[in-house]
Image (tube, rainbow, N blue to C red; front, side, top):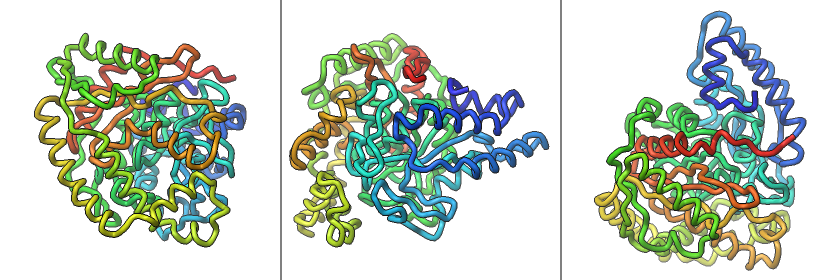
Length: 467
């Protein structure tokens, strides 16, 4: 049953070929058998999940469906509040983040019939691209023991890849959905800023945070996005634009779609396996009828610099109390990144915000006059060994973090929709990701391109070597 996708499982539940209880028990059994190797879960709510599954099963027998996720087991990053319980956010404080109401995205998934299995591990305070956590255990990619799952939504990527859950929510401030998706060989979607409500989730940088799904396939991601997207009175940044049917257009051909390969930055300093895999992926898109063109882009280093100033300022403001009152409760690299934010002046922060709006406008006008979708690598190298990622002084680790997330971070500054899809493996079996980026609120085109590539390449049919 772990080989099912979210979409195929939902269809079999509707057809009464699999019951919600069977699906939930299968996930719980797998969590018990292979979960401890990965450190993906912080908390498993087995009793609550089974109770909900029995309710969903009774509803199926009565001919009632709550929505497209009826009876499907999911799990979520532990920075969302749900079930009236606070979130640890990967810290040593069990109730680090609490709000009065459940996270909007989780509530919408449950209203659509999903079953919540529990809380997933993450990088402390959502800071860090590798998924290491000194408090709760380092999350490992299911594909190669001792190697990073990617961060900060590390548990989300590992749980989906290992078949512990059929989908998961993550958050993305500089790549924290797409990096674990690439490291774990699954799909990760950061929609346009404002497409999904952030209410009920711990903020790291309120002007660059995104909530989004990690799933086995692009179709699964489209289903989850369709459920969680839309306006929310609890989040003033959530867009009131109508939510399209993302699944309806997935199978449309991509012949004539203009796919841009950036002329700078995204080809620099890549691991040879990453370069080769992404090149092959682009050629697959060409073979499907897409028009592949070299695309001139504004310098992403400027976008990265702006993202750094803004994110550091906002994260320091959000977590100032923890840094000042309990600094030794934080991992050294996490503390070092937060403390930098205290040095950013109000003038520099406001200038960065002003320049960011101009840079985003110019980028969209210039780039998407040439192409419909950009294609880049998601990660510059396959998932590194955890020991190597954590080695050295805090300053060295921070520099390593910045290098690993340099291909995803610009699109948080720009607020554009970005999708990571598996596009191959290194020689020793570590996954590689292709990143597809589109116009603001044009997730449908990004998903269509990703789905076309995924179905042609077939990487999603492979499963990690877990027993």
